[in-house]
Length: 116
Image (cartoon, rainbow, N blue to C red; front, side, top):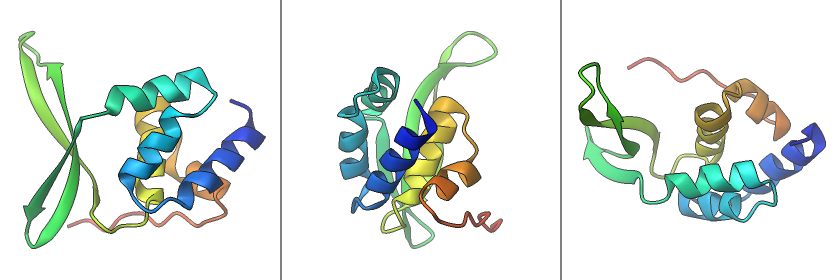
């Protein structure tokens, strides 16, 4: 994907209200690689309330060191967080793009999450 198309897409995605809207928009993108990556994530998110926060996790299975399938959960964002958190996670997780670069494409400043 060319840089100008990426910038345009990220700006469009940053205007969405929630993760499902962003994921649907990504699945409809003309860039086949992006659309397929988004489609592969469908149904892989779970909401859990932990420490009073509603957290959204990416839940997936992967072979462990013994070759056995094991389920993993990666904390992506909290419910109600700015959708840019998900947009940046998506491009990092699927295409190894730095989150800082995704935020810059949207004209925003990336803030490193605080350690808990």
